[in-house]
Amino acid sequence: MNVKWNGQFSCFDLVSKTNECSNSVVRVGNVEIGSGSFVVMAGPCAVESERQLLQTAEAVAAAGANILRGGAYKPRSSPYAFQGLGLEGLKILSKARSETGLAIVTEVMSEEDVCLIAEYADLMQVGTRSMENYALLEKLGGCGRPVLLKRGMTATLEELLRSAQVIAMSGNRQIVLCERGIRTFETATRNTLDISAVPVLKTVSHLPVIVDPSHAAGVRSLVPVLSRAALVVGADGLLVEVHPSPDEAMSDGPQSLTFRQFHDMMDDLQPYLAIRDAAHRHGPHLVAAVGADQC
Ligand code: PEP
Ligand code: MN
Image (cartoon, rainbow, N blue to C red; front, side):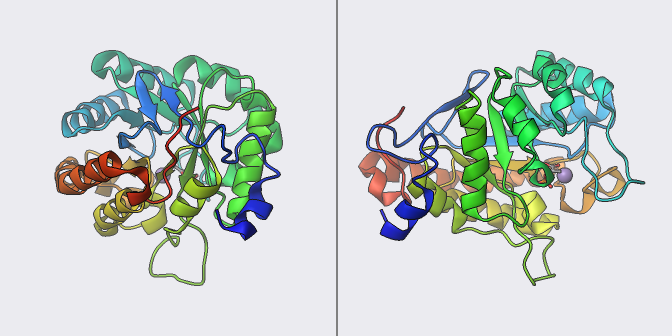
C-alpha cells in the first residue's frame, strides 16, 4: 500500500481495505459483483416504452449481460429534456426482469423515491449529480438494496469514498463504486475516463469497482476499447448503454451501442476475459491490486 493513499483514505474505515476485509462481494439478485467474475450491466439510458425495454433486455441477455440497466427517473442537464417515465418505467423494468431473469439497476434521484424504487430495483443507482446528496445517501443506508455509487463528475476519489462511507455508516455496506469519467479540459470526449481510478480504488478500498465507458466517452465508437481497458486494468464489471435504434433515443443516443455492436463488443472481450481468469488463477498480484480475502 502506498503510504500516502493509506493516510488519505483510511479514515473511511467502513469502506477502506483492511487485513480483515480486502475484497467484499456485493450480491444483486443472483449475480455476485467482486467475486472474480466480470459483470456486465447493459441497457438503454432511459426506459422509453415497454417494447423498447423488452427488446433491449432480450438482446443484452442473449449477448451475455448479467444485469439490465434503464433509467425511469432521469437527471437531465436540460429541464426541457425527457425526464423519464417514473413509476410506469419501474413497472416496465419489473416486467423485463420477469421475462428475462435479469436483475435490474435503475437510478434514484431523491430520498423521497427510495422506498418506491427499492420495491422494483435490485440495485439502486446514485448518479454522478447525486454523489454528494447526503440526504439520499443516508436514506439508501436503510433501503435493503445494494447501491451503485457513481463518481461525481468533479469529485476526487477521496470524495467518492467519503460518500460510500456515508452510505455504510447509515447501515448499508453493499456498495459498488463506478468510475464514469470526470470533467477535464479535454473536449474530444464527453468526460475523461480516469482509468487509474480503478487500480487506486481496488488498492485502497474493499468495495467492487465497475466502469461506465458510455458516459465517459459520449461517443459509441470508443465504448468497446474503453471497456477492454477497464477489464484489463482490474475492474469488476461494466455499465454500458445499449438501444434498439440509438439515433432515435430520447437520451444519450450518440453514446449508445446498437444490439449488434454490443454483441460484437462482448465477443471481442472474450480473449481478454480468458487472460483475466488465467491471471486470477496464477495469483491475484497479476491482476491490478485485487485482494485475496473476501468479506
Ligand atoms: C446514466 O447512467 O444514465 C446517468 C445519467 O449516468 P451519470 O449519472 O453517470 O451521468
Ligand atoms: Mn445516460
